[in-house]
Image 1 (cartoon, one colour):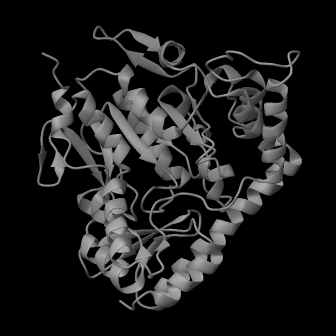
Image 2 (tube, one colour):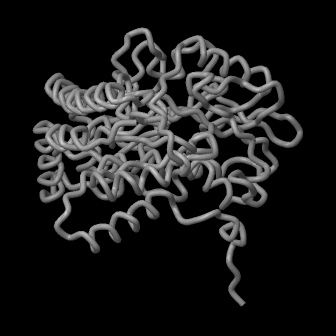
Length: 403
């Protein structure tokens, strides 16, 4: 008899964005003439930039010629891209190309990395939280049941208005810690001092920080750290996920990478230290065949002078949207976080999250993301995404009800 992994039976409900899609689909079927403006899921709307497209075409053309055809590439990524990442994205952090692992998405990496760790861990997740951090650990069997909006066995790091949506290190042991800045969903950004506190905590407790920096390209404040590796000692206790999805519009093209420094250590049951890099390399080479050559060539193009300008223009476009959303909603009585160094705006409402979602959809034709879908601390909030056209954002703000 074939049996299911019964940890899947613990999952509280279907994936948040699947639930949203079903509600929106039902609304559109019932109201085929109504225009719907999607400011919910964080999917880009602008096309790939000219440099990226040109490099993509060059890569495809090379695959069509015997002299330049590529078969299996290195699972960790082609050297030209890993070199560009280490040199450009981590200037001053002393990251080596061998510490960079190219993949098809940060969502995949954040889910897959947990395979390396014991099931007997104390895991800290933010609340509100990107659902993948939680659900993949449920699937792996690291939690109990879902009770009163939380899973038994997880430690929830509450991110609320009172702490500026930046969780602080607890006064008890944690082994594995998920952090995301600029944050999804709250749009909050962490200062150097706030990250330093987490690094010190991890070093004291021999813990590991999984640092998700998928939205780093949106940071414009020069005083904010762009990598956790800017913090002294972080390379011993942290790894970092990055993505080209929002940076260069690769949501449908698929390319990302994870950085695991050689200094980063994990421990066996006897307390012996091991290099995490070597275990991820083993997993990566066993279960992944690498990102396609044309995609990696396209990703590398953003590190040229022309490509960097184009990427900044793309990101700036969405930041204009974010600023407009934040200023418009603040003007009609809402309290907002994010929208300055982040593409997300976290909006406080007097209504329950799903009620406000339904109200906006049915009365204004606007799709948001209900904060309750990100955790107990998200109740009473919605997330608005800046990933749409400026024209649609303006129309949505004109329709948005006063608080």
